[in-house]
Image 1 (cartoon, one colour):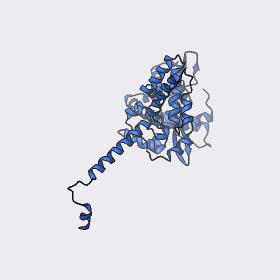
Image 2: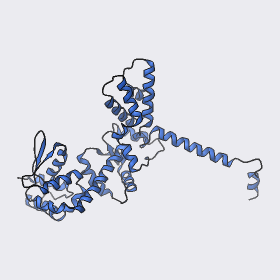
Image 3: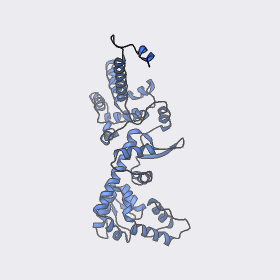
Length: 342
């Protein structure tokens, strides 16, 4: 297979190597071969489970390669980009791939239990980053790192996190890296107006809601649509033969998560369906309010309105209890006299 100089440079960049532009094609090719021969174990940082499984199947196949499902398209393109497999052929059912010349011998060494465990760990971390960004909507990179290192039983650094962001996560297009006011944010692809959310956050005395890994999973988009409040709206719509009930509820949840302010106009957008009478409208409005109050919002740093209300009530209750404790009883000594004796 003929490989251009630009293709070699792109592949090396993917692998975290940045050669001089003055280097010749043969020198670049040697650099790439050395990378795969001497430092192949480093690939676990950029390879996810699906890619590892593809490589494992390829190593076990003959020189003709293998057929894989179309769901592996992004992973196949990645392996093409780093020149591990030749340009693939695609039909309606599958993709045919095979190693680039000389690559099979190099990857036989890579496929082992130790690297498989490393790949699983990095895949887990990449999924956790996506989950964190999905819940908070947009979050500064150092905050993501802080949250990761609190949740994991080992520490990673910023460089490692960005390698994952630019490689593993890039395959799924779930996280956008953006700049705002000289800060670097990781943004969910669901966020519509990041500047508005940042502006509204700044006027609130809040910090990112602390979640366990399990709580983060519960707050993923695909789990939010399974909440009781979401199901109640879906059932309401289905009883009235309104089409696309699942899509309506999903869209509603995304709108709630993205709300920078809760006002009449934003609520009108949520309840934009035709109903038979005022009783139905009131019932539906109540269901929508219930959903609105239960869904974590980006502007609230991943809290829901219900959670903030509960926190405020608990705070007031503690203040009331302190007041009762500090109240002077009929037989208690006067505090004024105590101070005058000091």
